[in-house]
Image (spheres, rainbow, N blue to C red):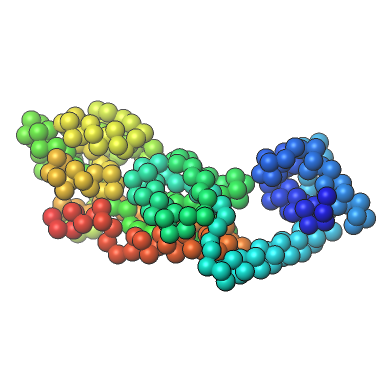
Length: 306
């Protein structure tokens, strides 16, 4: 085994936290990873880890060696990327985590467009609403809709995510149109359960005063598309991101309510780990997504003209 491969294995073990996790990332047997570490320590004549039955901890020498290895490996990657760019080719793998609805409806088509431009980039896409650990799970980047805490990750804003309270004309004719937010407590409300406080809807009036409405949910679901379809069928009033209901609002099958109130908005971001040399694949993909969705999102144009 070459010194380079042993060095790369060592870095993978440190980043992954365990030999087993590193073996999974490298797609090799756990015994092969252990053997490479032993070969590396034998070659250097030092111990790189304090070994216990449950985990590995770097020795002081191991910690210093890790930093040097990361620098060397990053320099190798940067040199290879510079050579590839000189020949106009962008290739390699990108592992991306995306939220289910937003990812499938909007980011997915953008990725397909990116693939048309860069056909040698290979994507591994995880459509899931869970919050992934980019570093531990080996993701190159993720799309996240959230107020992001300070972290070691870098975030770039893609687009604002507005929400809208809406119902079908048939439902409003049958049950009546709520005139003030507190009327919602008497209506059939269709609520999205992945929100922290899903039985409470928050609005802000023209004077900036917050109005909190406690609901008696008629239907609860963890899929926004299901709630949208139920609302179209006249099952009740729902409160969903505009990117899910924009086509129905454009066609008039769902009508926005409480236009004089502002509703909570949040930003979507593309996030990626902080590294000395950012992969050109990641850099190009991030720049592409930011440019793709700049300005007023197409899913908000119907709301802008109403």
